[in-house]
Length: 188
Image (cartoon, rainbow, N blue to C red):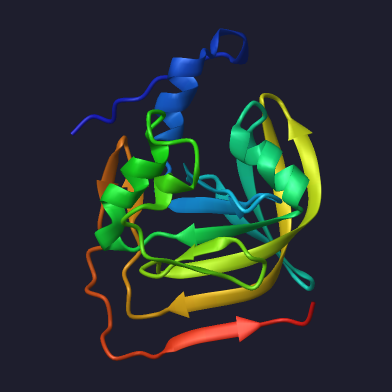
């Protein structure tokens, strides 16, 4: 079999080509949530999520600089990152839908609880990281939001939802059953 590839010089890279090449990188799928000062809840699907540091415990998400969620996070100073489980593909699609309600009714039918920061965490997520904003870094048309983890929940028995090449995927190995829920809270 002959390998097929293309190489594009930097001055000819366009958004579609860049996006296509990035689709080669499998990612997890998250819903980033925030509770505004007036109590309104907001959530958005995000796949640009990563750990940053173990000491202090930092994570990062990349959000479009024009997003309402970013504005709410800047104002609130806190947010939660919910790592979706394999069974939550419909949740991912819902929070990515530009036509979902703009207010707290976007959470109707989604099982949530308020985390340590007051932000909603999804009860069926494989993991949830409650964060205090540590730093915001402008990067092109996005902002890198770095958060210090103040509380985390990890449901080790749940398989994560994976996104690759424009579609949702599952891991080939079955999830282990019978592991306990791990919940850690750090001092405020």
